[in-house]
Length: 127
View 1: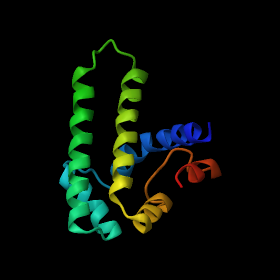
View 2 (view 1 turned 90 degrees about the vertical axis):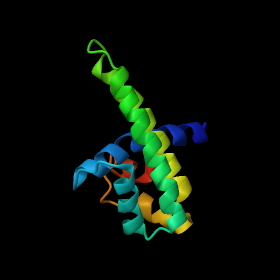
View 3 (view 1 turned 135 degrees about the vertical axis):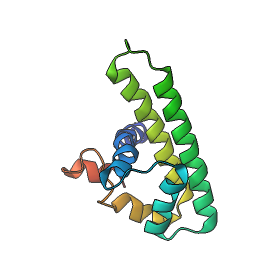
View 4 (view 1 turned 180 degrees about the horizontal axis):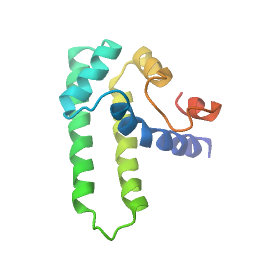
């Protein structure tokens, strides 16, 4: 039960992390730029950078497919839910690429916006 709750909480957090992280200070357009941002920020190795490019390529591909497949009559919430799930998966993959220290820094990074960040629950969910 705790694992399911933790997974659910992490998923909620991630849904806003990636879209808001990249919209916060700048507008990134390519998976390479997305990966380079995290590489520069956390001092990642070349192999980690390469893996992040693949993560973000998949994220952008799926996100574009979600938007392309949306009918104008679809509810906004349905589309947001699909994109949220995609963001969760991408964040899990980003965290997998990082080593333990980098992952801890990534989780603590307050410059990356997360839902509920104004309250203690938001920070707790990201650890």
